[in-house]
Image 1 (tube, one colour):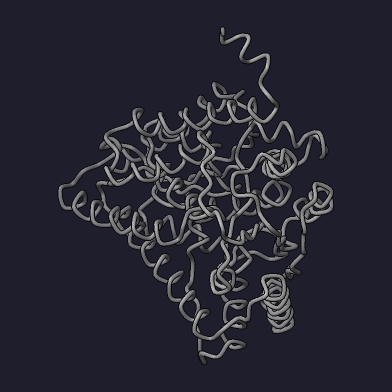
Image 2: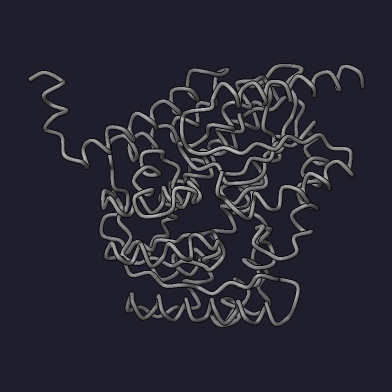
Length: 425
């Protein structure tokens, strides 16, 4: 049977899987073959994404899968109840196109892709329930659309300020309600032993990420920024013990690479801090352009990477209620999402990353239709200029178009940083 006839009798799900596999394998091949030799330990992550996104392998059979629409849902509570957290943020252009049938054309592509993925019902690890923090307005409003696909969607109230005691208590109450609701649905009681163990395990995972990040402060950077995005995106859905084991191996290899002065970029490659809308696999369009343009991403301030692994939980008393309140405090206080009415913490965080990672500039990317990042870019640009930090603002969507135009802008910015460095030296 010819390929043409095969395609004619493909089901919609088969066609979608084929298109998504093409998107995924292109990015994975770019990372495997398009740059200097990647760490051998990255093969675990390349294979993981290929198995899940190209071969539709389910990882969590027999487990209750708890879908989350944002990182503001404490995964520690889900693990403590023997569930698996699956973050539903999606980066496939194929799903973005499907989502356009349900949401306005000008909606955020990440939200459209997330909705499109759930609308297709073509999911390997389908969530048994979904919790949606009321952070992003578009995700919040999309909840009712997702319910129409047969999912149980529960809103988790999130404050728009974080400085006041009122906000702190408000979110504590929200997380208590989330904990009670999930416990009831799973028919399990949240125990002191299991919650303490989950907090410890996630804390150890955070420590591994921070060790990986420390290596990127070296003058010879041992790992691509895009590879690091792949590592952190794997945390969305991988088996937590497998992820930890793979990161332990990566830490050991990068430690040796730093000693051997292995550098994945050129000697004069500018060092970049990446911020703005989150890079979600396989939509690494802008990060790939940056590193293909002879720059290196040494740090980021995004909710799909650095922000997930910020401050660890500080617990005063190891009782269930105290631990739940401590988790709420951590997930609120460490958050630098632009949904907050005032967001000085985020600006301070970006400047701190530039200084501590010896970065030459910042690239701020916002999805077209991602209102909060589009609105906030002005204040971030003003703050960077005041601090004497070079910054480039880019607006893009999920489509493969505009590549040439975007490459030209990034390459010009990278070249300007090289000129500054030459003058400085």
